[in-house]
Picture 1 (cartoon, rainbow, N blue to C red):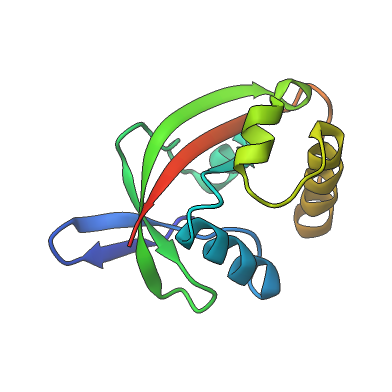
Picture 2 (spheres, rainbow, N blue to C red; picture 1 turned 135 degrees about the horizontal axis):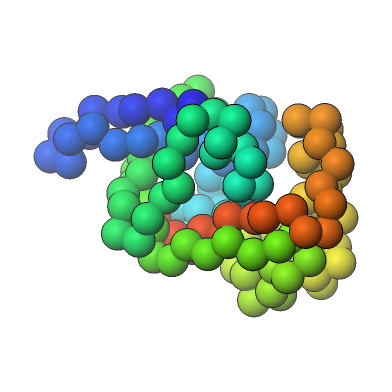
Length: 136
């Protein structure tokens, strides 16, 4: 579940944890904070499994560091759901993680979900595409 964080002046917001704890999360949150990473993806079934609502345009989330401390907020600027093989290169590139092309993005995401969740992602798996903007 997404943790809820009380943010002075903003009230209670959901927390956003990117990747898994450790070097990956540290790298991803740094990419968001420096404006390189303006998008992130998730499997729609993860939301169902965790009983979470989808993000919505205009929603503010607390970006959490590797120790679950708030780093700032992100504002959701767009949300779309597409089959895994229809994720566009423009989105993959906006993730800011240095993917060389859309096939590299697919390979890396399939590896991540297999390693962290034991899930083999089929071509038609619904993927939530989230565009965001960081606000320190």
